[in-house]
Length: 259
Image 1 (spheres, helix red, strand yellow):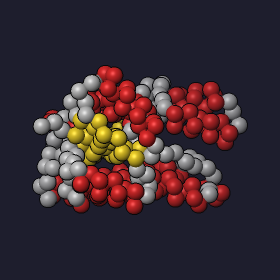
Image 2 (cartoon, helix red, strand yellow):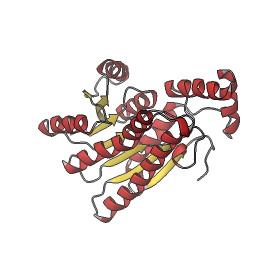
Image 3 (cartoon, rainbow, N blue to C red):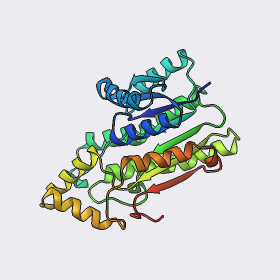
Image 4 (tube, rainbow, N blue to C red):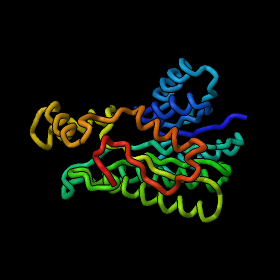
């Protein structure tokens, strides 16, 4: 019987790369996002390379606990088993803190942090993750250091890392054999990166290309990380040799953070 990975945020650049990589590793997939159309594009790309992969598409807004509860009610009814849970859904957001729109703050926190909790809690509550299962949360190097003009994003990702470490220790102590880890990308070339560069261009009063140059200058390797490089770290954490790795936050950042 094959193993199954559930990936939230599967329609985004990083989520797509993770989905493709886990399909290549032989997993069947449950792909989750807010919009079915984008999910279908991800599924089509996977099937083009891995025709034997069984894929289910599920719409869910992870920031809404009722939406998450409905998703898991359906999964329980389908007798789903989740060998790997990847919490990848996330959004950017920031600005001058004194002027931040309260709805923006709540949206970022609800999506990036509460969404990880809602999904993980439901999966554990309904005992859908068997012994030896893996929970992998996509955090950020921004969850280990402050990001200027991005207080909501940085706060949410700090929370994801704290949640990961606490839950990893909890599940290790109860001998469930379920590991919990965070992957912390630095600057990743993606649709989100394009939006972030436009945001900082407006804040700094410079052209977008200048923002990109400044960011790349900050990275010791001098470039953005590719989504596939993040996916490779996720794949490692699902492998048998990673069974002894838990409650960790592992960077994929080109040396941007060495902590």
